[in-house]
Length: 251
Image 1 (tube, one colour):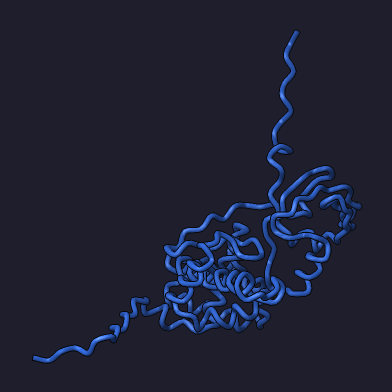
Image 2: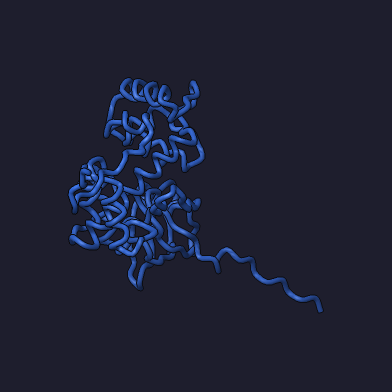
């Protein structure tokens, strides 16, 4: 009778669907970008995808055709692309990988929040699902990454709240900074120098007309940012500011 050698672990079966195995790193990046653009409530236009990824529009059309054949996106002529149910599931798994890795690099390895995006982009395509889950466990299963973006759960659930940007706030409105994009290190350094990070509270002190600069009050300091920068920082308005004033009692 043959005896199996002790101490050897059986390799885990690869349960990934065929279309997932066929995805390259660039194809995975497309799914993530389409998901992020869709959060605004619109289909992902070819030009918007091209700008986000820094590629030519012709390249986008070719990749969308391939993803469509794999059943991961549906393309509407003159409107753009939307993820299918399965495409959305894969996109959320990819975002989980990226955001868990970013969190691990910042929390455990001392990376700055402004220089982890590219590193996470490289690692997420090579890291195994088991490694990502061990990172998440070591961090205590964080719910958001260093830039405030929600981390999807292992089973593909995520809470995506509709947020306003600083540029949307009226004068005197108070808000809490929730998130910003991680793609531009220089922009993140610009925000950090002004104390604008996830969790910070601010109030709009004044704003110039015609898309002029906006003056904010943060932690008793005054900071001025351009309207373009303000549109890239997403906030949750103070619940107390949203409540209507109580009605006066009739005498």
